[in-house]
Amino acid sequence: MNKTAILLGATGLTGGILLDYLLQDEDFGKIIIFGRSSCEKEHPKIEEHLGDMFELEAFSEAFKGDVVFCCIGTTKAKTPNKETYKKIDYGIPVTAAKIAKQNEIEIFEVISAMGANINSSTFYNKVKGEMERDVLAQGIKNTYIFQPSLIGGDRDEKRLGERLAQIAMGTFGFLIPKQYKMIEPDTIARAMLRVSKDGFSEKRIASDKIKDLGNK
Image (cartoon, rainbow, N blue to C red):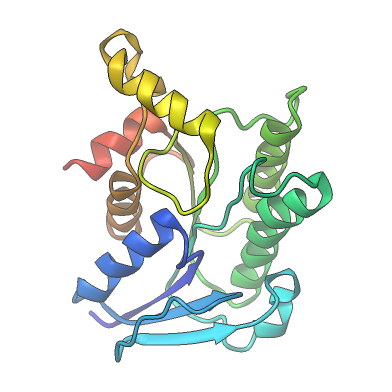
C-alpha cells in the first residue's frame, strides 16, 4: 500500500519516534509534516511544511492524506501562560480535526491525557477534556483519542516534578494499578501506528490499553 500520513508534533518526544516508525513502514509512501520548526530529517518520504501552527488553516490545501497523527502537546512548566497553553493543547488539535473533516480524511488520532475531563476543576485536565469533546464533534469516521498516564523518556527541558514522578513510579511501580503506570513514548507511537491499520473498538484508548496495543 502507498498511504500518506500527516504528522503534527514530529519534533516532540512521541512524535519523533512515530516519525521514525513511519519512515520504516512500507505501507506509508509519504509523511507530510506540519510544524513550527524542522524535524531535521532528510528522507524521500518526507514533505515538510513550516509555519505558524496557530494558523493551521493556511495549510489546508496541503493537509491531505489517509491518516492524521496529532502528537502536539505542551506542559504547564514549558508553557505557564494558560491562554497560550490552550491555544496549543486545544486549538491545534481541534483545528487539525476540522481540516481533516473538510478534506475527507477518515482516520484521526490524537494524544490527550489520562485525566482529561471537561468537568475537571483542574485547568489542564479540563482543556484536554474540551479538546477531546470538540475533536469527536467533527464526526471523522475513525477518531481515536489516546489517554496515556505519565509519559517516560528524556526531554530537553527540565521538568523536575515529572522527573520525580518518573523515579517514584519506577521504584514503586509494583504498587501502582496498570492503568496508572508510567508509559514509554515508544509504546504510544507503536500503538498509534497499529491502530491506524487495525482500528480499535473504542474512541478513547486508556493507558493500559495503549500498552497492550504497543506491546503486541
